[in-house]
Length: 254
Ligand code: B12
Image (cartoon, rainbow, N blue to C red; front, side, top):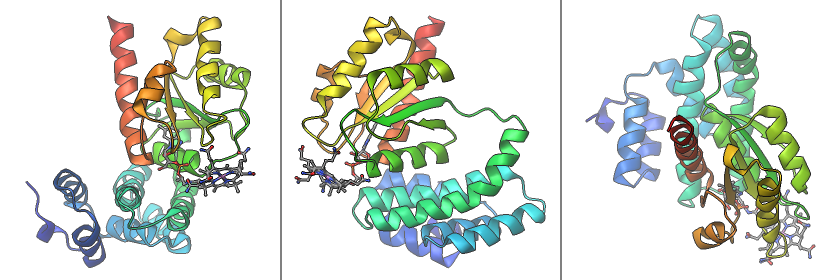
């Protein structure tokens, strides 16, 4: 197993030492950073620092020096975001810091995305995400979208106050196998269930896996309303999305 001492970048090493406490998280993050180039460490460090100007400059320079866009995305931007996600989940940093990191990620992705789409690299999967009808809270949803994007999903963001029909139209339009709904108000949480019922009525429920989330959404609530799963934060949302996609593939194959 890789060891922390094998990582040369002092900033990344300190971040792991100070903030990544769980043994599984630590092993995964160390493995991510061992063996990647010094330039990718610098991009990840600038992203963790929330420095969008630096990410912009370093990403451009890496591309100009011949580094592949995919390598910059995986070993620089996504690797950095992995640490940010855990720091947020464990309450070492809060929404404003995460939003700064998200801006930094965007600065790098502004160079990477056009290259990847021109080269026809397929996303991990298509996801439709939105905050349900009557609800204007979007910070948590946007964090999930950012992490999903970082993990290679193509995300179609329907924004806030999204009606049942808007969810259905978007899933049909993009042929998305996965959908996520967010709700923060006790008065709007039932709209997630109503949207799921609308998918059943439209005979589309078997074609799409549906995840739900928001501070008050429990696994029991998600189950009761007929969702396929919930996750308590943006890191867990990515794991859930991957698991649900796998499940759908197996169901379709069998
Ligand atoms: C910021 C905020 C606002 C902002 C929203 C700005 C914005 N652009 O989002 C503004 C000021 C607009 C606002 C308005 C209101 N708010 Co408000 N708001 C909050 C606050 C302080 C923070 C919410 C937040 O962003 N949390 C941070 C994010 C990162 O966490 P999160 O949303 O839970 O998301 C994480 C997870 O839940 C999960 N997740 C989220 N979505 C999804 C989706 C999927 C698919 C998955 C898998 C996971 C997932 O991952 C996320 C990332 O880690 C909360 C209180 C609190 N501390 O929670 C009140 C709170 C949610 N608001 C509340 C209320 C009452 C209102 C208003 C009705 C107030 C009023 N009287 O006008 C209005 C409603 C407006 C509307 N129609 O929506 C109440 C809700 C009470 C309740 N249980 O119903 C709360 C709890 C405050 C309180 N204690 O009373 N609010």
